[in-house]
Image (cartoon, rainbow, N blue to C red; front, side, top):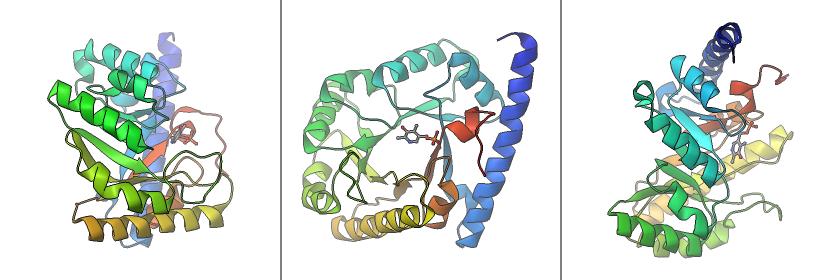
Length: 243
Ligand SMILES: *Cc1c(COP(=O)(O)O)cnc(C)c1O
């Protein structure tokens, strides 16, 4: 990017960020929640290092990536730049056990824990590194065949087993809602919250986090209790049409 387009893009990012924080704040207030309880994770999977640096300049520090290799690559680039010292990456996409190495040490939170097998791999690898990896269990709340994650019943069944693994710290749940269906999204998010409350009660874990809400449904997610909204297109794409 040349200097002029950087400047233009930075202004867009700053304007958009202010709008998003305003909308998140209003949704929080509608639900009697504190805006500070919701973290905006900027999903940077479609943009490069320059865009991440510009987004950081306008105030973002949490970024989401869905591919292990790309997450590792971006995290390495960030480490080279002292100005980006407070940038943190979240792993939000499908993670295969043979890719765990690329993510551990590079992500502050794995949103997409979707099998016991993966949990065991993360546990083993974290122990080898002498670290503990914060994770969310991904739940397929609407029962869509194509979506990854535990069914609610599986989540109930494996919670204790995963929670007992050393090297993993379970922080809550993550889900995706059907696209372009506000009523279905609301049902999915409220179902996720109820499941979180139930599992929290049963396990005695703090289990505070609910990762839900994307560009098309984040206000509904915040109204239903989301603590981590994962916003991609609406953060980075000036052509994304919201209405
Ligand atoms: C891409 C992606 C997002 C962001 O989606 P947008 O609709 O662009 O906001 C959120 N979560 C996951 C898991 C993703 O893969």
